[in-house]
Image (cartoon, rainbow, N blue to C red):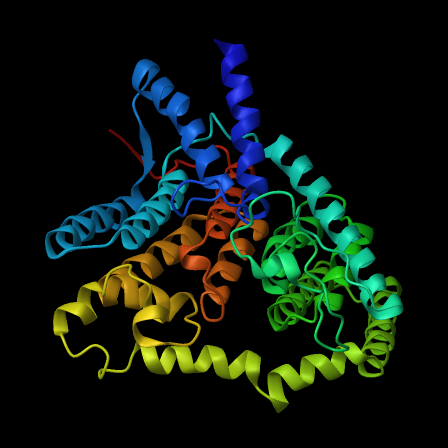
Amino acid sequence: MKGNIHKLKILFTTLVIVYPILSVYYSGFSSLTVADVLLLILLVPIFFHYFRYKKISIRKSWIPFLIFLVVQFLVLNLHGIDDYGIMRIFRFALYYLVIAIGNSEFFDINYGHKVLRNISLCVSIFGLIQAVGIYVFGVYIPGVLKFLPIMREELLTYGSEYVSGTLRVRSVFGEPAHLAIYLCVYLIISLLSEGKKNIREALIVTLCLIFSVSSTAYYLLFFIWGVYLLKSLWEKRDVSANTVIYVICVCFICVIGIIILFNSGLWKLFWERNFVTGSSISGRISGYEQAFNKMYTPDVLNRLFGHGYDDYRGTYQFHYFAGIPLLYWYMGYVGLGLFLLIILWEFIISKGIVSKMLIIVIFMLGFVEQIYVSYNLMLYMTFSIFFSSTNKRTHHEERVDI
């Protein structure tokens, strides 16, 4: 029995970490990705183990939100919901359920840390190879396996025709922003975890993210490295000679980096996307204007409990919805409020700077990315929960047995 549990633990831990990568590929079943199908398969023996040998342990903070999802689904089903909406709410519930279940027996934080490190470094190195191909040779090296079914068909032809200034590093992901969200988990751990810091590895990850020219990557890099520098200065607040030398070296490196960035085409591309054409910023802002516009939500019930999970783009020709407007559109003020309260509570009870930083980044990304209804939430919250438990093992976890 112990051997089987160990295998499940290894498989589950690995799947949570590679989930964002495998989500690029289509399973052949409805709108499910390969990662979705693998998770469903793994949940069968996990639930069997729980029902056979122990009670199901769920984090208290997530119970109201899970109940809300069930009730909302039942109500939507009475009023009619298409297959697209059913699969979407099913997928969201799956992500939240994985976070909510007390799966400490099936997630190995030490093994997971090693797997995350190895994959993050491989992804970053491949991203740097892509950057050399794009910016030196004018060739894009695909990061997806084209012989497998892809969720987004445009990825099969992306980079087939090189146009200067349009191609960006994506590594093995569908978007540069997805690359940034994934790599920042390990960047936070490598810079802020207790003990020896992996600065070299953090620099490899950072360099890959710089070449992605993703506004999300640049904002996160500025924030994470800023917290790291402030934390380092605070720990050396005795203002010794070593501290002064450290500050001078950091400032020198920052100045050199800024000079190189300003004199490269990367900065020009970033500036144009964000402040000239405004394609990166305007697309996100217009999403807020449309989602919260009463013209599209005249019914008070829709404002409170959402519109459901149909394709909002296909129905209204809306722009991109980030996490906050998207959660409001799907679940209304009640669902959005419940979710944000849960994130706040998880932050309050979390222990250690790594755990808290992961939750802060979740909150920040909700303003610009769809992490609140994404598999990336599963990755961030799982590592946050277990890094918190390793910081204070005697802390009484907020759980309830069913």
